Image 1: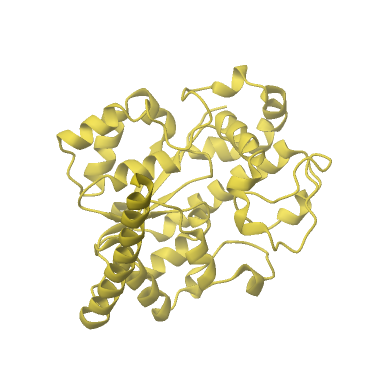
Image 2 (image 1 turned 135 degrees about the vertical axis):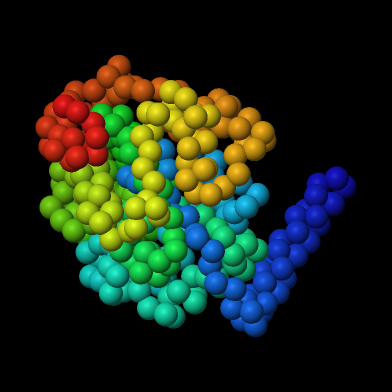
Length: 307
């Protein structure tokens, strides 16, 4: 009997949320509430973007969907219409219709005109997002090449988690001699050259491509709308690191938020095991990572990681 009432409660909550979203959408159509300094978390996949996103989303000043939104964004500009070449979007792709659709969607789901978003592809779309929302703030998290590439390799082994969007990809994926058959994380120009490559080369390609795209896009964003953080700084001192980010985003850093940040490493978000720096050096992918580090050396140096 208890299970029955739990099921009823869940069903009522689900339908209640649907009604609430519908009412918010109607209100938005009337009031046309413009977005208020939305925040976009950007960075390479497996760089700590989820930890950063979830922590910022804990602010009561922000609305959040508390999930990845790649399906929503891709529906606006389907990959098939771009020949499956890339997830990247330019400023020319931004339209008044897109701004309206996005603003309405996030208000309906979050109930807040100020909201935060994160997905694997946002880093390739900074010019588009900035053109849509000139008032937006971008928080770019960087992670050292060794640890980031190692985590990407591990992620490629979790196809059901990171490849759900690529079921209709019009290409045969045979990475690592056919060990990996679904493309993971994101597409960027040149990805077809890696369909049969070793997985570490694919990971290095993705690390280099998205970080270079983000750094190139930085020039299009006003300095006061751009925040950069090293993943390693958040690991060494999460309270100090997050306090600086919250303040730069013009968000209160009160006692509950400080407590959350103090314990954030004890309840990691989407982490593969223990959170620590230079984990790759004693991991199972060490030889693979070492082989491709020269391929990303120039990119890492530009990001602020010395050789």
